[in-house]
Each structure stands twice: as structure tokens, then as C-alpha cells.
Length: 257
Image (cartoon, rainbow, N blue to C red):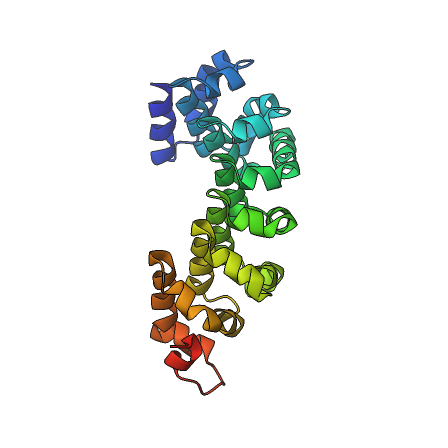
């Protein structure tokens, strides 16, 4: 009922309902972490953080201080932690609590990038966070780049990086991924590594450099389903055009086939 009321007031953009809703939520004060671990109560906390203005979620954010990392790694709690990102950078005490939780999370960003649920907060920081948030996540990925790229959870964070960050921001990561033939080979041999190469091609970052790195590896790529998907992407006209811009090569030459 409480979650439905939050959703209803948000849908109607009923600002006058917020104080009354907060009165209902007061019963959860002192029990936020417990509620986030509960099969049903977590929906109420999640919806509150999602729909209420920042000034009304202070008690939730304050109780998550010191629990940010554990909740970011929790199957239910992660949904609330990632929604705190939008409350950062606002005025007031509630926003400062939200920022403190996110600072805790960023302090463990490298491990969270490889966490089944923690990765979702990392992706939200890339999508909706500040420039500093994005920089911290990129730093975390770069600190153990190949391990993160070959991880079953970490590889999805790279997809968000290539989707939302510009080439300047991704330059160091791209250089680390394809800067040496040995590194490229290690990614091709890894199922998750191939996902990262696929997303790198798909979003067109540093296309000429990427095509040049993958050109000698066409045979290896062609030996697996994931590798063939990369070759298919490279063969698309828009990818081929980016990859051979100014070089005068055909796509077949570029791929070495």
C-alpha cells in the first residue's frame, strides 16, 4: 500500500502528498537497512528514494551511511543505493548524506565493478553521476583492466562506459585493452573479454585504432560465435567507414580476410 501510494503521488505529480507520505514512512526510521533486506519492505524504501524530492529522503540516506557498500552488493539494497545518485549535488542535509553513501561506494569501486549487484550502482554512476563520479569508476576499471574486462560482471560496466562516455574519457581504457597484441589475444580467448571488444566496436570508440588492432586477429575471431559477432559488427558499413576513414582500404583488407 505504501509503495502504491508513492507511485500514485509521483504519477499525479502531487507535491502536497509528500509530507503525508513521509508521515507513513516514519515507522521505518531506524529500520532502513532491515527493510532493504526484506522481501517486501524494500519496495517501499526503493520507491521513496525514486519519487520523493531529496529533502524528504534524509533519514533513508543517513541510515545507509556506513552501510553503502554492503547494500550496493545486496540484491534488494542495490536498487535503493543506485537511486541515491540523483540526490547527490543538491542542497541540504539529505543530499550530503546521499553523497557520503556514494563516497563509500566509490571507495570500493573496483570490487563493486565485479560484483553481481554492485555493478548496477557503478553503471548508474556512469549514466547519471557527476564528472567526478564517472572519473572514479573509470579509474577503478583501469586499476585492474584485463581482470575487470574478463569478469562476468565487470564486462557489463565496460558496455556502459562505451555507451555514455566520450572518446577522451575512454582513451586510457581503450589503449589498455588493445594496446598490445598479447592483450588483444587474451581478450579474444575470454568469453567476457569478447563481449568487451564487441561493445568497443559497437559504440565506435577510437574506430581506426580498434580496427587496426583486430585486423590481424580475424582468424581467431572467426573461430567462435562471439568472435564472429565482432566481425559482423566490423563489416557493417558505418563501422567500416569509421575504421578505414582516410586509409583507402576495403573492409576485407581491414579485417585481413
